[in-house]
Amino acid sequence: MSSHKRSRQTSEDETDVKVFTNHPTLYHEDGNVILSCGNTLFCVHRSVVAKHSPVLKRMLDDAPPLVLRGCQHLELQDSAEDFEVLLGVLYDGLRIDFPNITAFNYPRVSSLLRASTKYQIERARADLIACIQREWSSNLHVHDAKMQAIWSRRLAEFPTIVQNEQVMVNPNGNPGADAQPQDAPAHPAAVIRLLRDCGYHTADILFPLFYALSVETSQFGTPMLGTHVAPLQDADIERLIVGIERLRAKHSSMSQFYPQLRLPPGHDQQCWPGIQIFWAIIGPNILLSPKAARWPIEAWRLFTAHFNTPVYQKQYSFCSACATVLIGILEHRRTAMWNDLPAYFELR
Image (cartoon, rainbow, N blue to C red; front, side, top):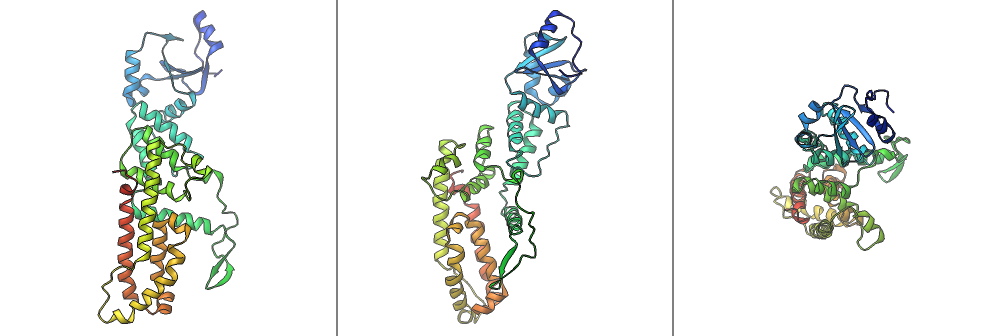
């Protein structure tokens, strides 16, 4: 029992001691409203909860005249754990601080978004959605930066790397760089279901999550897939399947056909043959591997970067000016593929 428990004045108060437990940090001695979640009591200030939540204000205004320990008493159906998270944010000035959404902190994010949606705490909802959109951005440049950071961390896990066909010590190696469990990303399927349950259905917030889920899905019909997509509603499972098939078909088609180029005058004979040879030799290794089929946006970024490498330009006899023309076209194609993801996953 908390040291902040109110003085008991009646025999009814003596009985409630045996039934209820005061929350250790959110039972305020000077509070004037008691909210109960199961056996847990929160003694709060009406001005605080009513100011930020029109739903709680309405519930307090319309509630039956129940009194506990001299305070208005309102019974809630929420779990004590979920309501603790919500009240903690209300008493912390509605400050939402999730630099990254991980498997470790996702349960708290989920509880808070569900509760702030239920009780219409709009500032908290907006901040949480901003956190999700920052983690799974619809902006391709932000997405690229995130993926680059992930690959850099993963590369640091290897003590050696292959460079110029030689094995050498990884100059950026860090033996202690192994990902920690608390750093593991939250599962995209769980986040999609959370957003659906909280009334968020717009394409811009959902398609990066569907793409993130698609890159983790290698084969349908396996036992693991059922667990993999278990949080999703049936309609979203269908969207995922259709979207993956469309995206991989588009990627395969793009991989097999050279783009139409307008090279500088005189370079058709000089550079175009080298570009074709490069595409035929390097392209399959990057674009047609099983991993590339799962990560098409990243595969095209990697392939495009190879054209900007002086070693390859020299080896395959095409100039930097022609490489720049080709890179611009490939980046345009990759951006178009990214922008078409909402249509592939039938989110529009």
